[in-house]
Length: 259
Image 1 (cartoon, rainbow, N blue to C red):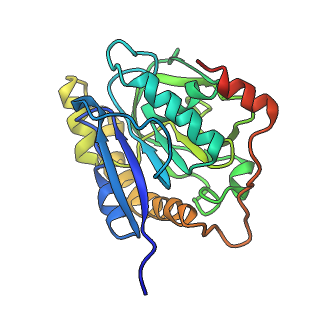
Image 2: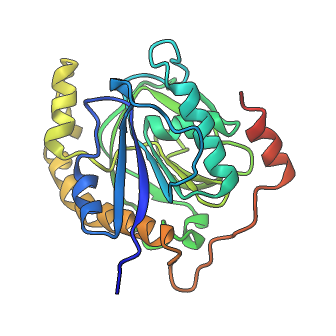
Image 3: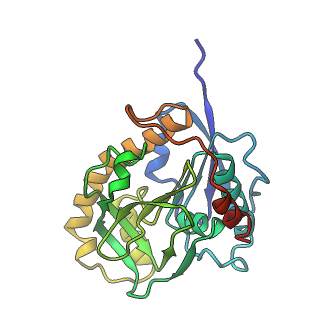
């Protein structure tokens, strides 16, 4: 019997933020990765054709820095197309901000300063009905390293995780695209390296609590990525059903007019 292998497109925006731990997590699943190193000149595909899922990673640039990162307009167009055609999509940190802008949300500089280090988030009620988030603990650990935030979610988006710092920590837009404002892919050592590269002081959030967060995250977010792969294969959480309806007309208008 042959294994049904699905192809996942990975959009790498920054050499300093590749798949990291997610590469190991995905290596045990029935997907193959098509990694596009956009920062090295790899092309953004013109459509989602040929891809069963998309992961858009983080990066040092902002969602509006098209002059600094000239591939961003094509990335945002692809993410908008993925929402419209219901290609399972996961945006992480910058990737979530690009997804938000692509579908009618807004991204701004965080008014109360950046979030960096280990943090707790909390599930919203809607998470209990979400095929990726239903099995998360009520207050999952995450790692942050961002200066910008998704200030307003795209029209029709469903908020799934919040925190005491900034509300829009994780959300779903359309039926199969998720944005995570935080990182799940780095180790504690990776995050400390990012801080060192910026000569950033190691606060308490980079101390023991960061190591504790890594240990917890390795269990929680590995399982999350495996659920994402299961969803790509059409296998969803028992008792839950991902809505298969296309976005309504108002959402379509916002997505198609985002540019």
